[in-house]
Amino acid sequence: MDMRDAAGRWDALGSRDSSSRHAAMELLHQEVMKRIETMGPIPQSSSPPAMDDSLSSDLNALLAHVLMLSKRCPYEDIRKKCICLLQKVQDVGVRIPRPVGNGPSRFIPEKEILQVSKLDERIQSIFEDAFAVLGRLDNISLVMGFHPQYLENFLKTQHYLLLMDGPLSLHCRHYIGIMAAARHQCTYLVNLHVNDFLQVGGDPKWLNGLEEAPQKLQALGELNKILAHRPWLLTKEHIERLLKAEEHSWSLAELIHVVVLLTLYHSLASFTFGCGINPDIHTDGGHTFRPPSLSGYCVCDIANGNGVLEEMFGNQQVSELSGEVEVLMEKMKQLQESHDEEEASQEEMATRFEREKTESMLVVTSEDEECVPSRDVSRHFEDPSYGYKDFYRRGEQVPTLRVQDYNWEDHGFSLVNRLYPDFGQLLDEKFQIAYNLTYNTMATHHGVDTSMLRRAIWNYTHCMFGIRYDDYDYGEINQLLDRGFKVYIKTMVRTPEKITKRMYDSFWRQFKHSEKVHVNLLLMEARMQAELLYALRAITRYMT
Image 1 (cartoon, rainbow, N blue to C red):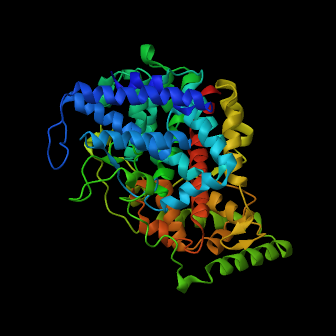
Image 2: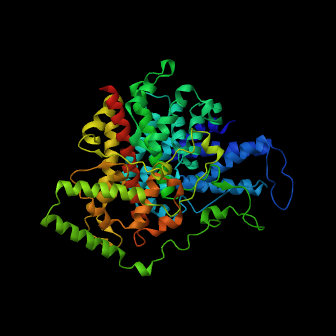
Image 3: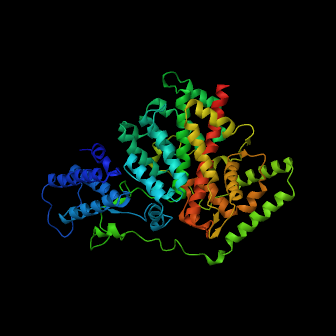
């Protein structure tokens, strides 16, 4: 039985009804033991054999699923029963898998991430809802769990975009997600959507490469690369070519769905790299069947967390930057006081924007080496050499888009809502939650108004895309965002595949991990909105 077929029988593992979970667990237990019996006697040896034939390959996939349930199911009864099942499998001489990596993130200690749901009933409820729908809790959701208000909206948006009625077929939605994530070499998101693409009946041949997909999807290659790297170059002619391609034409409603998917997964790739997201336990790279040492691997390690490298320096304080937070708070206070005293002229504001935009192009990331995409990823998109780096090296300039001429609130929102009903509202809520989210804290300080800092991060991100707010003084950015933080922001937004743990650790060293995740949410949403504005402006120009 194929794993995708079998999984449907265990949907009740995510039920809030304990008896339904118990019945589904019994089915899972029977399926595992049945497959072991089908394989015949297990040879006696000092260590269980590694198995490579098709029968054992199916069993391995099933055991990886059980391992995932033992670690990620939001219900303790299922976690315990899965641990017992894996112990039973090990006792009959079959090698069991173990997790690889440091939990959901390479950057954030696993205990800190998993502690959130134990202390917050709302997060536990959100995780239960997500598990009931998807049959899994992915690592992105676990990390976003630091911010339940945002996570709840994010999951609702994902559900609507990928599963509810809409212009595009389900398998096309996932394939476009693969194309978008591959643009930034984000194997985590590519693998996630490959599995979902096959789950909803997608043609496996399409996964051999973009050239194997239908011509209509291939035609999205140029839109994908321009939006990912230089969205300001998108014109109404690009839109026209997609809408007037005879039998391969897209409708306007379909195209809105397409650009939302592309911009979402470009920006989600930024978040994935920015938070150091590890492969999910049940996917390739998330587990291994190789023992960690000659002594073998005990199933009790799954329960107590052994076999997982502890984050040694995650909470280590950096003494030489002990005043970092206080200095930033003082700058915010001084800027607020200067607001009350005088306001720069419009000409000066425009000059400061152009200066900041130009300087942002010259910020060079400290990890500025070439990233050559692997064939596994690059086959899903065209023109791998096209990127952000080469345009500013040739001296090209980013034109300015003034928000008074085209913005999300007055223009983009209504266009999306008209062609993809109700989705504009969901997107708007997601942008608003990310932008306005605050706990009025900065590191250990409470009762702090962080609106000025959040606005600087959002507007600096948009500045790199040439988007200007006439009422904002861009001189504030240099006061609030130091050069190291700007390097991180630019890398995260433009070339996220180059983000490293060293870069993540080096900015805001005294701030909590939850605050850094909040920064990444801001950057992700600001990037998505910027790309979306250029796509929607091009569509508007085509329509008028």
